[in-house]
Image (tube, rainbow, N blue to C red; front, side, top):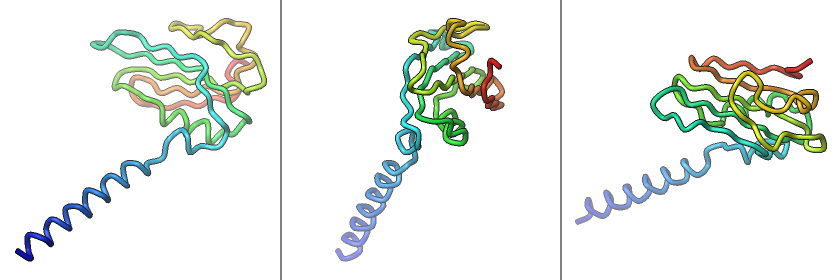
Length: 131
């Protein structure tokens, strides 16, 4: 009887620890910079490469925080994820789309960074990508 109580208590403690550990994982909300997703595109192709493109505003040019934000974004094996960062008080595209140009050319001068994770999971982070 005592062993049964010990095992139940140990199980409850382990489940509690698992729940706490899961809930305390770092996320986009933990980053400095007040990131806000303004536009997002994802193709509907689930059998081939999945393409994700985001336009995100940020308070300041916090380069490390931007790269960490990009690392937190979803990525699919053999897919491509791009995140364009814009300062919050500047013009920002409200629509992004696939292709060589991911938003209207008039917004290019306002992009402060581009994060990209390609099909082979290689990451590139470029400051002022359209200069």
